[in-house]
Amino acid sequence: MLVQEIARQVADDGGHCERSTHYHRYTLDFYMLALTVARACADEAAPVFEHAVGRLAYAARLLSDDTGRAPHIGDDDGGMLAPLCGRRSDDWSDSLAIAAALTGRGDLAVGAPTEETWWWLGGHLRAHDAPGSMPLAPPSAALAETGYYVSRSPRGDHLVIDAGPHGYQNGGHAHADALSLTYSIAGVPLLIDCGTGSYTIDPEVRDRLRSSACHNTLEIDGRSQSTPRGPFHWAHSASASATRWRANEAFDYLQGEHDGYTPIVHRRHVLALHGDIIIVADLVADIGGGSEPHSAAVHWHIDPRWQVTTSRDNAVIQSNASRVDLHIAQGSLECFRGDAESGLGWYSPVYGIVEPATTVRATRVAAPPFWIVSAFGLDSSNAVQSLDTLPVWAEAGVLRDAVGVRIVRDRSIDYALIADADRSSRPASWRLADFETDAHLLFVRLDADRSVARVAMVDGSFARSASKRALDVVLPRAVADMHVDMAHGAHLAGSAFGARVVVNGVEFTVAPERRTAARARVGRLDD
Image 1: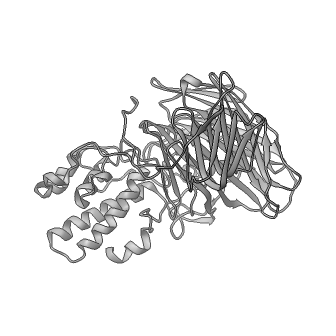
Image 2: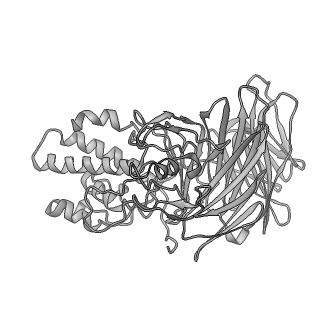
Image 3: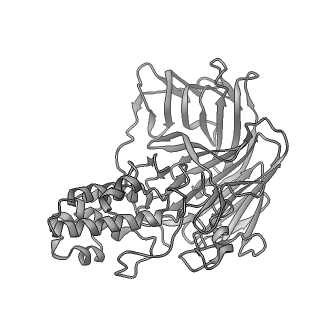
């Protein structure tokens, strides 16, 4: 049975088909136990189990941050297969260490063998099974079949975006979390999933904590993307997909959408410049051509160890070790903590417990298409002061959807443009402020003296400013992604032959992107 279920329950990318991180860890532990016993008994199934363990552990390593902590995605019943040392159920470092020893793959571990590794394997753990040095952190990567897209930064930031199918069979352990995301900074959770709380004892808690409003995603007209029918079934479920995913040394970008509100479409764009800023642009569109106003609410659930102070369109999120600035364009902010009426401001750290937390909600009422843009400033030395939308100029009928923003910061001004061209239109270009491009995404940073300091581009062949001396990027063909900064030069995905990149009068030599290398890990922030 264990052999037969591998093909049914483990996706090709190693993710578990329940779309629940907790049940993924369960499955990994079950197959590690099966592998350990099969080897002890010289069972012919041992190589099959080893292959399954390797795939499951690879996905588990991507889904966990650099301390081994995994976000709560989908159901979490708080249980563990081998609770030997009183470890938290979201701490996967023991399972990853055991998997590394069983498969001989030190890259699966987050550190030295844990105590559980010795209890599990005993005298069978050989010296060469244990990683001798600190394993390198994996780069940003996607589990495309399961639907998880993971962005990592050199300092250990960990962003997981859910842009895949709802769940296995009836989706019994999945939540209404299409296009939701979680985020931790150097091992400290910031944007969290609200958890599970209950299965059958409290139906109200069960349905509320797995609703869209209790996830870091967008809710339309007060309705959840997916509608529950009993504790482990759904009357209607949304399915998400990623239409673009770019990952490189400087930034990661995802574009995704889901069908939970058909004919209304929620399309989400996430740009993560590592350790610097995260921009989340949410589009509400009506593919049926309707023009009636709709209410859209973007929820951001903050881990309790952070203190939140809000005003009309921004929030300051602080801990002892860090500060994050959240600004909203085209929406008004509200803050909830342990609010009984709305059901917001609660989270379940482990099954059976529900405690107060903080929820920040951005709401906008408008006729589609319309946008809500959120920007998280991650660099306290260059804090975000304001976020405004700007018009995107193009010939009539060229663009299907577009949004442009200006982000004023302490030491720079950032411009970001996202544009989806009408597929039936001829090749064209569009403008934001002083910049013209044909790219799907363009990000430009101007420093204090108005010099270009940083450029990021997705699916484009050129970008230029009104003064070509300031910025003039001309590529022989559209490339998947490109980034330039004055400290580290220019990098693009694809052929660099014939490329011309001029920034502030300096012509850069374009290097190919080194996107497959693991990153050296640095220290974490204090809890």
